Amino acid sequence: MAKPLDGVTVVDLTTFVAAPVCGRLLADLGARVIKIETAKGDTWRATGSVYLPNRFCKEENPVFDIYNTGKEFISLNLKSEEGKEAMMKLLSTADVFLTNNRPAALKRLGLDSDTLCEKFPGLIYAILLGYGEKGPDADKPAFDSTAFWSKSGFLHGQAPKRDDFLPINPPFSMGDTVSGYLLLAEVCAALYRKAQTGKGDVVSSGLFHNGIFCTGTMSLINTKPYGKGYPVSRIEHSVPGGMYCCSDDAWVYIGISASPAMIPNMMATLGIPEIATDPNYVTPDWKVVDKEGIYKICKEKFLEHPSEYWLAKGKENDLPIVKLNSYDTIYEDEQAWANGYLEKVTFENGNIDTMPTSPIEMQSVGELKTVPAPGVGADTKKVLAELGYTDEQIEAMLAAGAAK
Image (cartoon, rainbow, N blue to C red; front, side, top):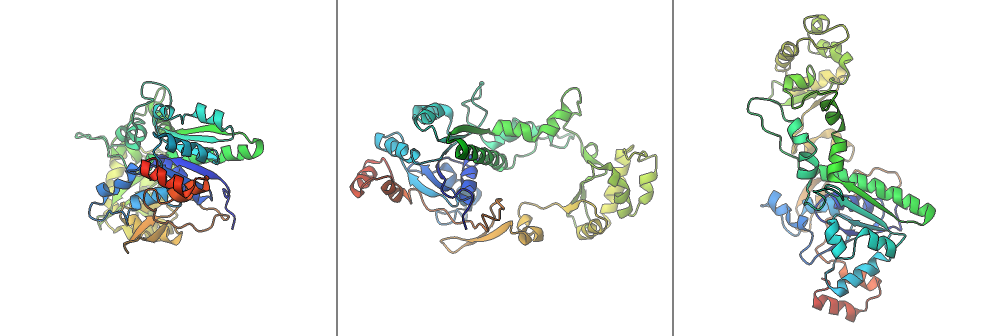
């Protein structure tokens, strides 16, 4: 079956997560993605040793594979003349150049957008930025924890307000992934334009910009003239909806804050229908009068039964109530398995890990499987041969350290 991006070639000069996500999804859509690494490899290859010190090894590296499956891997020394020449030959065959290197470093290598777009007018130049190309932070190192989560206001604003206030911990790689998604959409739009006009484009996605946009509702309701004033306490946040602990110590979340008209249904489900018409608690248009009082009542009711009871009651009464998964219990979620959102991946050492599947869901693509990535430079010889290098030239480059 032909995939949407069959015939498209992507040169992937990326590290860490955000831009590699874009490359992985382009490969899922059918593009040939050739990832270029230094002799030491993408720094993210070693990150597994931080998260999985007792399991990580070269043969089993799911933290790297999830963002790099489906790619070919070559190693070039772009600071050498031979390596740079090979890079330019490779770019002359490419539709897309994908990178997350900082603009100043790219300019020193002759890989900035002005240089490459003049040399290859049909090339789509796709760059993942941290804080944007202008301003005092333009060339500052950026990660999703800093540029996306911290600088957007999320870590401060979403922490519950209390006497011992502490900003919440950022989740790793999530802001990166969101930013990679946007870059993917821009690349696909640019490929469509190129098919119509033959012209390339320059597209970018920024961690800080995406953080601001993703927290748009929150920042808008906090700034003048609205001034909601986050962070707020649990009671201020979403009562009578929100999180409740059940008798089995598991937590559920009921999402009715955006639809107050669900309050009568919720109170009836809890066995306290009279609360929904009590003017001491709720107005006729479903505004909560006494948040602290109604929260106390709801909190006590949820503690009367285990989480599965409340999930069943929610389903019976068509209420948006879910169990709060932890990161590990996601892998036991029946709904996730039923829809193919998770898969078992077998590694070279025989270990089997559970991993998320690709978020690409298209009939023309079909089922996608995560394939463990090979080592640094696994495809160097093959790709160089395709570019016209002889066996002798390739061996000379390897011996000189221009390639690996």
